[in-house]
Image (cartoon, rainbow, N blue to C red; front, side, top):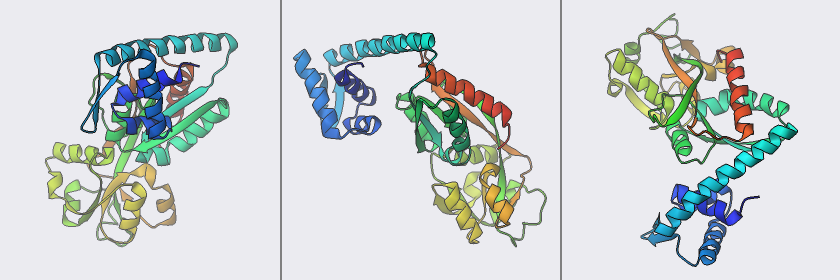
Length: 301
């Protein structure tokens, strides 16, 4: 309902990138450029300075961006007020989740939510924790669910539940018959880890520092971008790793991997993260409350 040109401009201004705005809006870059040029023609002034493949807001652009934010907030409040009168919960929500959560926790949660609120369309973006936090900071997504602590104090962070990480070994490994393992015992074997920016990797690095070890002591022979790839490498006997126990239901049932708790135990938070703003669309509030209840009813994965 709000002016499409203004929506497109606001997204470009927020991300300071035509390419990223096109991805966020599911548009082509030429279409985004056309909408912005139309708005510039309407105001008869440039809204962006474009130099060396970088853009910045002009003074006029800054003013339009400021008022556009107020317009969209007022429009959203109007929408919510009407929906509260009619009892309607609808709209589009963009959720971001780090890989482990997206693959092993969210499908059931979002499936149950969709059954209860069929008029809410949920879009899911998957990245590592660092990428998800960045998307929340830039308002690319409405809600993030991440697997590591969030350092930005300007964002609202709410614990969903705790997740246990364990040592993962192939059957027949010299340590596979142990009931518990010290992290130091893994230093003697080839290690497979997640990529830079991964919440899993960040939590393991912090854990090792807390117990007096350095992650540099690990014999890292491979870095992979997903739990599935890492599990496959361990199953093939390439190395050992530390992963969320939540990712291992199938493999433990089939006996293709062995999971051993660490001493001291290693846990991390699964957390919701979103902007600290007084206004949110009603569908977002309903999803947050639904997710809180889901996590309360499913304290462990």
